[in-house]
Image (tube, rainbow, N blue to C red):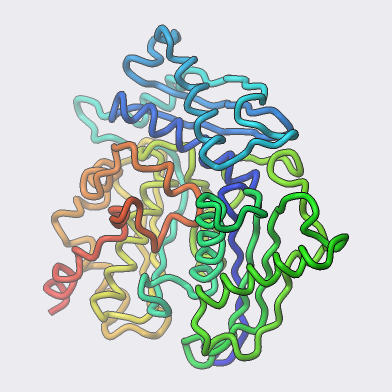
Length: 403
């Protein structure tokens, strides 16, 4: 295990074109789940200059049944999409919440997928797809997340809050951050490089040195507020290194759902099974199983069983029982990894980690997903409360099982 190294993670803001797409897709998930907790949704979004396109498969009581839209349903979908873009803050010539063209190509869920997922008289509900999912936790930060990603998110969250409040009126919605930390042992000791590229109002670039300096000073101030000063003693800063970033968002680059899966998870510090989260209802194990493995890994670390923990789980479409469960504490465990695996599988309230038991235990059949679609799905609170997969209510169960 290496003890001295540099590691880097990046984040993107809510106004990044891919994140605009993710937030729209999850707004549709929330809309349908608010009407039918058993709705099936797989919604993909494309954004580009003055255009938003939805595509995918749905089944939702009172909205789309038997191949037909309910009266007013398509209008409500469009209203939801435009409200999402308005909340993000896009009122630009190239992308404006009132003016973009909207195309809805959602259609009914495949009957062949439905028959594999739905519970029947002699079978439990199956997984909505095959695949492998990973969860991770580390004691680097209070939220048990990798510090490089944690600080990358926090920089952009603060800038977005200042933009919305009017404290930073020169900012526009699109932005990216990147934090490189030097580690000694298992903990970060210095931020060696920080990159922030932010879309801005006209004039705040290399053509007006005074305004460019104002923007740079603001960003460095945010960094100083977000990252502990002890880590900033040898930092090299790269603020809008191209010199200008006036054209951004979907007008500057097309956006698609599911293209920021490393930003969404652990910033490259842990493996990723490859499946995106946004736009999917919780029968899709790409989403729900990634949430339960984060929940398990976080509780393992919080219980003092390890300082780092990676958990993998695998499913087959239409099959309820997971095919495998794998725990790796990276040599930091206080008990054997195989013992932790057996403890997890033996905890009755987890229900054997079937898709239905995951959703029941974490309460996933609710419209809670749009807040996940920017600044990461893990290590965060929403509306002042943790997402359910961030709870630490399994600690005592694990300690008892391993006593």
